[in-house]
Length: 359
Image (cartoon, rainbow, N blue to C red; front, side):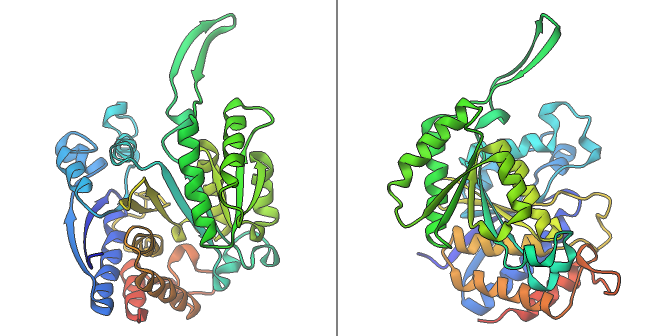
């Protein structure tokens, strides 16, 4: 495997350019420490692309991503474009790039740092030791099913169709089993099999695939129960796999266990090594250009990139250790600072993490 990689960098909207700038510092530090080489190519995407190019996903940006080894995305969207027609909304570009790159799974780790445990509203004794990953199916289900309105007996009705094929379920579930094998060897499959036919198909497929992974402990959890158990016993979860809408909701719930959505990284993956890496948070236009955004989620997304797309565990671990050490030393951006702590800015946090990185 070559030590030179091409990264497509899409800063996006709002605080996106600010947090991506700090992630690039970490990428360059990784070159210095480990001898890796990166070619960074920048492109327009989202709201800024609508303003400058008339589309959220310009053809040249998509081509740049398709030719890259990985994509780093800041954030897209904002109130400025909320009233645009569907084809001119930043989020439409996000759905388009996922489809074009074949990214069918979204991986969202939720790790509670001991030094930040009091930033969460959940009791310390419940949270301590929480380290889980939500694996969300990204391109199927109710978000992508047929949608229409019709006249019914009681007036106009709206219909959203939830559809899953065995193939779609199998590929995401196998990926989740593989991730569980490399972690705590526990997999919770979340569905609503007591009500939904798609969930019954989901559970049947999971049970069949489980036979290929005897070393992984499998638990089936109904989605409403999982929502409760994430708050009651988060440390009992290792890897959670679920369909698109359930994963959307549960991963945001899991994010808040950590105290701030500004801490959460994510990866969107397909069949090969190409992945799109981005913070879970949005573009936060209310704090854009103020230099106060938390860059840690984006920096940790780089660590995910190194691990999942490039197989570079040494650099990934160095980033994660540096983040932990900086937080343990008491440094905080505003979103994770308590009343008695002095908050530092976006650039200062990035500089501290870079300075803390070692081989």
